[in-house]
Image (cartoon, rainbow, N blue to C red):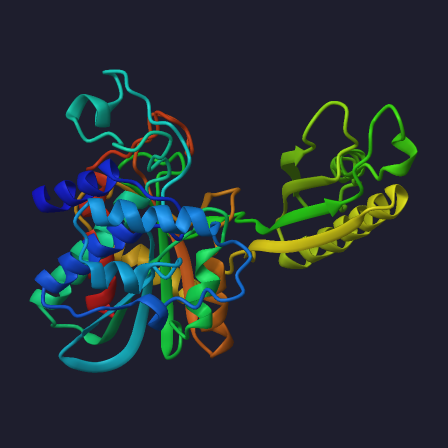
Length: 417
């Protein structure tokens, strides 16, 4: 427990956002090697070419510089740079059997961590050392769980088949799983698991399936008009800002899909350069969510029609890029039964639920889909962590007693197959 907690705290103190997790990935690689596991990483695991959700070049370059300051080896920085921060590590059992994949996400959020004494990481001295970046969703715990599980299995390989540990970048914004799928990280996996700490569950509670996970798509919308003097010749301009605001209002006014829970949000709008200039450029950051993948696809078509109409109305050019995507979760009953059995035998588990609500999105569903397309199975389960504040909040934290529960549950699942 001490080493597991120490690793979680080390990761928590140095958070990195999606596709910039060079220090985090280097830490994981070092820990795996110390356990006798030689991982694959970089472009072998992460195909990022063509991904619209990558950070801009300046942010990727800054991540390189930070990693160098933190003492990461230059050759490791080179391999992990450019968003290629994914890791794949296999541990082989001493008996034949199928491949089990387990996903662990590594990225943090652009959230400022609370500094008051009542916030446990601040009180214990392991709060974020990076202003405006924080592990506000428990991914530091997920990563530590994956490393500890790999270490235990390598130390005692008395289990069937192979366990493939997938350390994923950029879950936030549902961007990173696609990079792993494109690299073939799911090839040959017979069953895949993903887990999440927290979600309102108390320590000692496990839910074998996360119910209500939403399909989603994230879009970056760019509108290009024509600048003009706002007083002398406004008629010569094409106002991209007006087109963007018209689109934003219409998107939020889309009628619901009967019987289906949906979400629409325009989260960012950037436009214009000065009060006396007709805005030439505008950019929207938006998302759509629905409780079924088919309904989400319908929302996307509606949204495209609205965006195209607003662009046509104002005489501006339109560019839409998909920056992230996740499907609705499908859980296989036999896998959930295995999770339940493992949980019931795990120390510290007091209650095992068949399911619990998670009305959010996670691109681990793309990994589950990839495995299912090749005839495999999978599930996404929850482990309670008694969070003192909501996910994505500056006072978010996990009760560290949840960490060994998750590790033992996964180890029992592996050994009982």
